[in-house]
Every structure is written in structure tokens, then in C-alpha cells.
Amino acid sequence: FFQAEDGIRNYKVTGVQTCALPIFGANWVNDVFVAGSTIYAGTNGGLSMSTNGGTSFTNKTTSDGLGANGVNGLFVSGTTVYAATNGGLSISTDGGATFTNKSTAEGLGDNQVNAVYVVGSTVYAATQAGLSISTNGGTSFTNKTTSDGLGSNVLKDLYVVGTTVYAATDIGLGISANGGASFTNKLVTTDPSLLPRSEEHTSELQSPCNLVCRLLLEKK
Image (cartoon, rainbow, N blue to C red; front, top):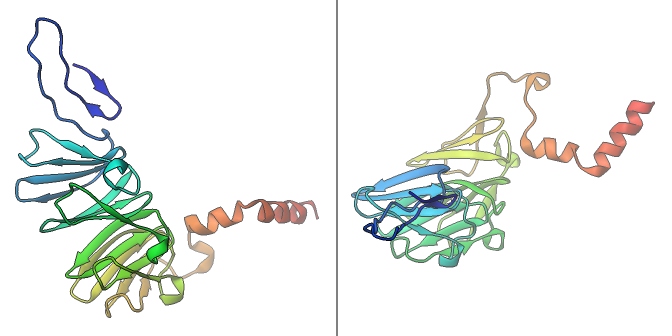
């Protein structure tokens, strides 16, 4: 067997029958969505799809329109496939054959999209800098942040039931009862001294400017 980082490929040895093996984008699979007999696997090397229940796969990458080969989350509705990637939210209207990528240019909070959920024509994208919501199928987005009640701008996952939106952040669970217009944040504790620092806040503290200021303060 020949196995590469981007999955198991076909192989042929002289005098031995050629065998077709499943092709994954990468062995690191971040998410999976199943619709009928079609399996969609979001990997670190592309979106791998099987139309025969997992017997074999084809892999889609940036050459097919994905914003990045790292696919973090998936949602499928009919023939429309939504792929949350490290380079934007990629949308396919032909079952995953080709994609159009949405980025900060369309209003996403950040190009790193960690998860996606869809209800009708409303698309919810959990980004590294807020919850981006589109009410027109992904044509344009508005972004929700801590100023709208989220515990952190770093969203890890989300779930939607009707007009109730659940947003998993790295500082609490944000719950909205009005379709994402505003949120109430749920925490283990409300004591600020015991709250973890978000990834966003930590990266800010590690900026060259803040590091210099902290060093000067420590010297005093």
C-alpha cells in the first residue's frame, strides 16, 4: 500500500492488479456531515466526499474554489454545501463540485471560519472574530461581537433552533432568543479574576507594543 499525507492513493505494482483505494484530503478530519448515502468529510487537506457510503472518496481543494484546504466545519442542505475553511466560508450550489468563497470582503468577521449552520436562507458562520450572519444565503454578512453580548469574539461552534442561536465561545456560551441580534452569555463564574483570557485577548497581550510595556512595568 502507498500512503501519502493527503490520503491513500491508487497504486500499481508490476504484475499485480491495480487497486482503487479511498482518497482523503488528510487523515486529520475536523468535521463530517451525511446526507443520504453521501458523506462529506472536512479535513486538513480538503473536503473529501463519498457518494457510495464511504467506499471511496474524491477530494476537493482550493483548485475547486475552496478558500483554504483546511476545512473546519460543514453544513449541507440539498445540493448546497457550506464549508467553513481557514480562508473563508466556501459555498457550493452543485453538490460540492465547485465552490464560491466568501471572506471579510462580504462582511465575515474573520477569514478563519470554525463552524457553519444554516436555517433556510440564513447562514451563521462562527469565525475567529465574531458570529457572522447572512440573511440572503451568504451574499453578504453582518458580524456580531462582544458588544452584542457574546462572551468572546472567538467562536468555536454553534447551533440554531428556530430563532434561538447557541454560540460556543472560548469565554462562555452565548444564547440569543432573537435570531442572533443580541446575546446573553453563560459562564461557570462571573468573577472577572477567575475568567480565562480569550485567544483574541492573549494574542493582543503578546503584541510587541504590549510586551515592551509589560517589561518596562516589571522593571519598575
